[in-house]
Amino acid sequence: MRLICNKEEVVSRVGSDEFIILAKMDIGSHTKRMKFGMRLKDAIEDSLHIDKYHFSLRSVIGIYVVTNKNITEPRDIVKKADMAMYFAKQNPALNPAVYSEKMNSEICKKSSIETALKKANFYEDFQVYFQPIIDFKNKKMICAEALLRWQSQEYGLMDARDFMSIASLNSEILGDICTLAVSKTIEQAVMWKSSGLTIPKISINVAQIQSTSDKFVNDFMIALHSHHLNPKQFELEFSEEIWKNNEDTLDKIFAILKKNGVDICIDDFGSGYTSFVYIKKYDISRIKI
View 1 (cartoon, rainbow, N blue to C red):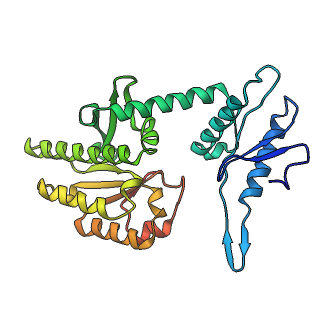
View 2: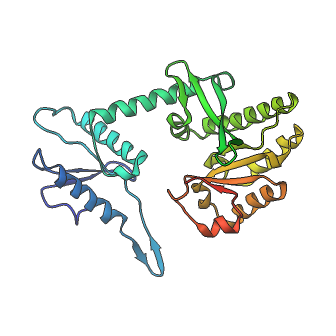
View 3: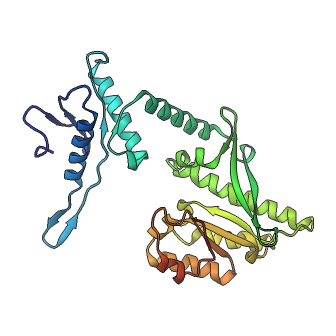
């Protein structure tokens, strides 16, 4: 960092892995500030070579601009720079991030949603809705995708994308929500079977926390068999983050699913860890682009 900063700029270490840099720039120098932040980021993340080993660090940079109009206590300045850093951490594409009031309101809302999640009655407040997937060739439904919704007392009916990223910050809450979603889907499948209604295929979204080992798929099979449901009636939908697992874990997960006839879908294909090698190797049934 000292190689990037000049003699007029102050570099201070405030924690084991946190630093504060004070730099003087013109008020309207947004481009200059971003370039400075990017230079810092690139310098920190540059590979280190020690003997035959290679090491790399990740950095998150938050920027707060102090002017004569908004000058305040040092504690508040650091707090707002920290908010920008938190925002950049949650939105890697916007790293480095410059603090704004809009950013502050978004962070406050996320904090409020996290608090509401902790107080929620999971079984009563969370519901599973089913979205039909239609084959346009014969105009028939070929699958029903289970979608989780939260009836929040504070925010009303919420889509999973509005709260799952926040729930992921608390592994206990996320685990409970994911378990509940699967449980309620199986409950509905049992009700349909009892009423004589045949659904060709039921698709269930699997969170990354559930796909880090073969425990989830083993528990899922046990649940299906205990309710006398045919595994071939189900499809599990994974995000591309599943490819982060080592091949031994992937082999175990997909071997169990293949043995039981469960279809596999990869969601948002092409947005992250895309691999046609894995698609062929594990005989993926369907991809969502």
